[in-house]
Image 1: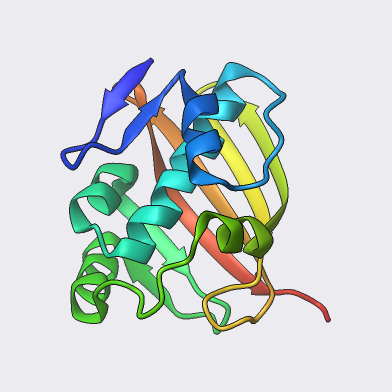
Image 2: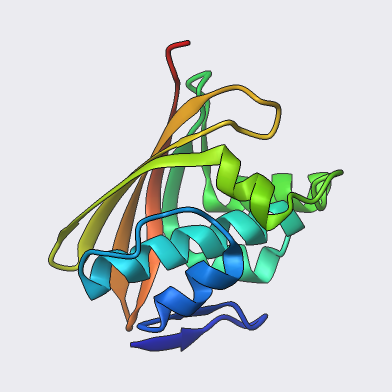
Amino acid sequence: MNSLSPTGVRISACATAILLNSGCAVRLGGSSAEREVIAAQQAQIRANNAADVAAVDFLTAGEFIGVNASGVSRTKAQLRDELVKRGPANVQATPEQLSERQRGWQVRVYGNVAVLTRLTAGDHGARAWITTVWVLRERRWQRVLSQVTTAAP
C-alpha cells in the first residue's frame, strides 16, 4: 500500500521509514497493517501539531467523531474549524519531545478496522489515554473515532 496526502504525508507499507523519521518511540514489530496504522497515527499527530489542514483531512474520515476528555464531541468539520482557528502549536515538538509524550502504544487490527490506544502527556502535560478507531478505505487508513480519557496519576 502506498498513499500520499495532498501535502505529501506518506502513509504506506514503508511505515518503518516514517516512524524512524518521526523520532517517536513505538515498537516496529507487528504486522504490516499494525505498522501502517501507527504510521498514520504519527502522521496525524504531526499534521495536527503543524495545523496542516489538508493532511488532517486526508487522514480523517468524513463521518469522524472525536470525544475529548471533558466529554465534548466534535465532527470532522468542527475539528477542521478549530484547527484553522488555532493554527500551528505555539511550540513545535521535536522528535525527542514527541517520543517522550507518546507511550503505551497498542494496536489491534480486525480486517479493515484497527483500534489504536496510546498514553500521551498531551499539549499541556495532562496525561491522557487516547483510543482511535481507524478504517482502511481506498488503500489508506482514516480515523473514524477518537476518544480521550484522562489518565490516572
